[in-house]
Amino acid sequence: MLNTTRNTCNLFKLLLFITVFLFVNKAISQEWSLEDKWTVFPVQPINFGVFYSVGAGTITVDYQGNVHVTGGVVSLDRSAVTPAVFELKFPHGSTVTIDYCYSVMLDGSKGGKLALIIGPTEKGESGDEFIINTTSNTFTQFRVGATLVIPAYSVSSVYSGSFPMTFKRE
Image (cartoon, rainbow, N blue to C red):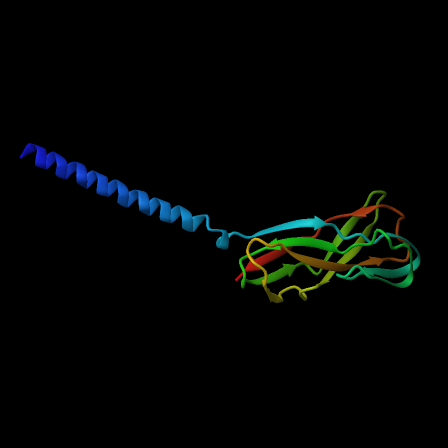
């Protein structure tokens, strides 16, 4: 009788171990599923190329990399012009909402500030939604354009800064 009780107890322990082991494996596999992972990488900053101003105006780089100038702004070298580019990896069919500030201030290395107006992106304006149509293991490029506002008496300098952009998965 003692052996039967011991064998029953060992069998119960084995079943308990198998049940717990299977449960833990199932929980871990759900937590680390590739379908649930998403990432965003900034891969290219926006670059307006070389330009100068003889008065107030703007220089715009659209999300396709095209340059447009207004007023007293003259674009000299368009070979370095690029839109900002992010790489997104979301599960297929995800609805993503973009959110960003309309404008930020850039600081000059020799003083001065310039306003940077963000957008549009290739997927629309801040608050717009789009659907990821690629597989989970494929990156989708997301391009962002912007306009730099040049005041009449701006300081000749190297201007830099950053802009926050949020990608919210619905």
